[in-house]
Image 1 (tube, rainbow, N blue to C red):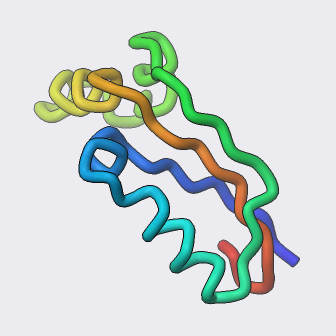
Image 2: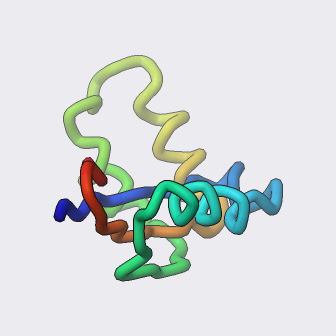
Length: 81
């Protein structure tokens, strides 16, 4: 068994695709073992994407991720990673 982190970004939430994405994971035999709908702070976005700091797209990526709620998931199953 493996557990992995899935991050549904603002565009997925805004387009109403959360259920479809989760359904696809479940159809593959993976289980949702944790979920949190949250608003990402600027500090968390900068930490999460820290490896990209200084790259031309970093600021727009950080702004995008903090623009509206995201869904953080922990998914478990065979070959989840």
